[in-house]
Every structure is written in C-alpha cells, then in structure tokens.
Image: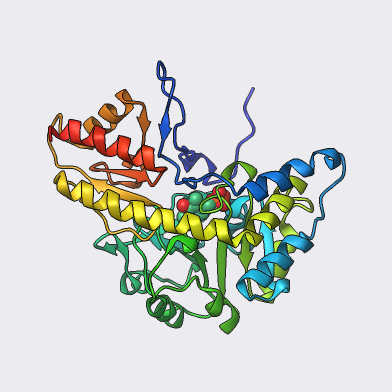
Length: 363
Ligand SMILES: *Cc1c(COP(=O)(O)O)cnc(C)c1O
C-alpha cells in the first residue's frame, strides 16, 4: 500500500504552532502568548453573539452585507471592495491561492508573520525572506529581492513578532518601486493599536491603484480571535477573485453579528487602545529598569531580548515564567531564540510578569 502523495511543497511546511494556553499543575494561567486583546471582547459584541443562537439552523448571509456596511461606514471605505473571511488568515491564504502558483515566489521580510511562507509552500511556491534593518522591514532590501517570478509581497505593518512598523511614506515607496504585476499585501492586523502620526493602515494605497490589498482582523484589538473574523480591502478585480474562490458561507452568522456590534462600539476600541498604550509604555520602562531590552513596539506585544548564558537567557526566562503560571511566546520558530514575545495583558497580569521577571533577574 502507498499513501496518496500531496502536492509539492506541502510536506516542507512546518505546521503553525499557536501560543500555548495550559500549564500542567497550574490553576490560574496568565496567557500572554497570542496577542489576544487584553480586555476581551466588547460586551455589545458578546450580546450580539448570544442573540444569534436561536437562528443557528439558518445559513449566514454569504455576502456579509451588514458587516461590510458597518466597516465601510466606520472607516470611510467603499463597501464593494470589502471581502470578509474566517479570520484574516483565510484571506491571506486565498490571496496566495488566487495569485501564486508553482515556481512563483512570495516575498516577505525576514521576521515577518509565519503564515506567509506557509501559504506560499501550500501553493508550491517559494517563500523568499528579505533582510531587515534593526528588526524592521527594509524597503530597499525588499525591492532588491524582487525577481520576475515574484507574485506577492507581504508586509505586516506593524509587524508580528517584532512590533516595529514602517511609516506610510515608506510603504508608498515600496509600492512605487514594485513592478505592476506584483500584488502588495499590507497586513494591518494591529493597525488600531498604533498611535503614531506617520502611520497609515494602507486603505488609501488600495484606492490609489490596482495592486494593493489591506487585510484586517477582529482577533486583536476587538478580542474576538475565537470567532474567526477578518476582512480585506481590495481593488475591485482582487475582490472579484476572492469572492470566486472563497467558501460561499465562509463567515458564520455569530461572527457576522458580533463583528458588526464590535465595529459600532467605538468607545470600547478607544478604551482598548488607551489601555494598551499605557501598559506598553509602563512595561517597556520596567523592563529597562531590569536591564532588559524591549524592541520599540507600536502593537499590543513587546519583543524582549535576553542576554546569553545558562540561567539568564530567553529559554531560562521562559521556563521561570512558566513556573509562575505565565505563558509567553518563545521565538525559536521566528529565528529569534534570544527573545520572548510578551503580549500586553490586563493591569494585574502586567504587574505579575514584571514581578516574575524581577525575581528572575535577581532584582
Ligand atoms: C494575529 C495576526 C493576524 C490575524 O489572524 P486572524 O486569522 O485574523 O486571527 C494576521 N496577521 C498578523 C501579522 C497577525 O499577527
């Protein structure tokens, strides 16, 4: 007997490993490993979710009409260019499936989100990583890595796991330097957290041409990762492609209802952003006080670098935090074994991490 053989590239994929959520022998776990919103979901989104229970035998609106309308109104966008998905992850995968084939290349920056190379390999394509400068995407290095076979350039802005970002002018320079046939996908999963004047989510670049897509998610500031909901803002021809290849009912009725309520609850998003900015700064300062370097972050997580040496390094810190019931994210799979990525959580959670790290550092 021989097993069926998967397409080329599939068995080269190292499966994505999500942040852990349990520790054996620990009752109260503090989970700061997946960048889920510190405050959970909006109470209005939860109420809207519950209200759909009686209708779960009905298929959802396959066009996500009400949700797309709410997103367009909230962000001042063209409703026809919005495509919703089961997490932005689905949309990233569909973009690759729609535009990339065997022997093509997918370009991203060295410490970019791991879903990009996974999606590329799933299509039989070659993922190509461009070097960064100080853990920040480099437009020059990305442009230098473009070849005749490049089909998509992915840039997460801000980037996960580094937390760094490129100003809007740099993203525009990237687009201007790419050949027209290359699709630029700006993954703005953390856009709502950014409080910098020179930042842009990329929506204006989508409208300015035919070859930029922006993706967004409800998994981060909206705190709805368990529901699986994301959206893409696309040129009309790209929206058409996504609408042809996506599942006809790819977003559940519960996600549609909760998502609409979440978008309309702007006070909750503002609260979550303020919470994040305050505690990100507090956390970064405390880390500095402990002699630990935090990569400057505009998102809801911080990449913390540890010195070398047994008992002092990142794996030792990870093990120590776990012994205190605190789960953060080791970065070996991203090629950053000297770092831990720590999500900004609630007040008490941030205080607990700093208390544990103080003890670890002998401070
Ligand atoms: C978390 C994250 C996403 C969101 O994924 P969903 O599928 O929407 O939950 C997308 N891109 C990046 C860079 C992320 O960190």
